[in-house]
Image 1 (cartoon, chains in turn cyan, red):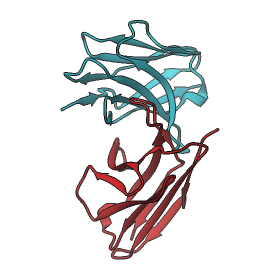
Image 2 (cartoon, one colour):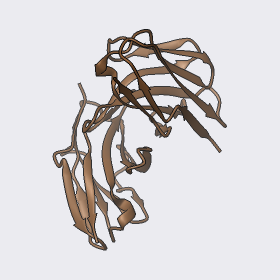
Image 3 (cartoon, one colour):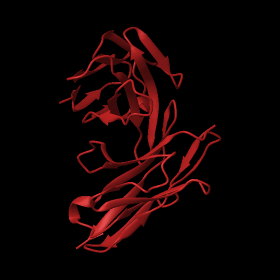
Image 4 (tube, helix red, strand yellow):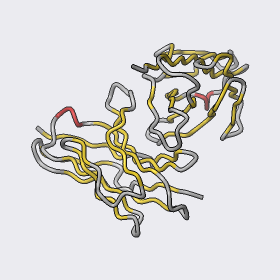
Length: 111
Length: 113
């Protein structure tokens, strides 16, 4: 069965600095999608970034980028120039025919 | 553009009472629909998903049920709530295209007394 592991329950980063959130997953499939979702204190889940497994190029969305290592089954999220509004729970998710979420990493932004 | 509405935002219910949470999607047809629960400090747990009217798949056996009476309406119900049903419930939709991202409602915080 597929699993998603986020090994960092909480992280902190200074405002304007860069932080990387880790995510590993386990699957025997070769075609799948990976996502990072953000859940701010308002509790609404927001899609941050998406990566197709067949694409070697890492996805980027403004200050957010991923380091996708398919062989290592690793999908980390890098947030550059951290802002106070980035404070949230971040969930990594794996999807083939179903979506599976990790348990989340709570990110604190220090002013 | 597509929007998803979920209500109520908060709900306090006594043990043993019934439950009905509603979710509707606008701006798209035949979406896949999902109900998740997020217990305090934990990740998301998929409860139900639906690929069409009247088609419900249950991921976790429990005293909750789901129904999809209309294409863009998804309802989470219970006849008798348990203390363990407390949590944050999220509805989501995705397009029928394989591996399309899910879009979430604002959630319902359910407290059982």
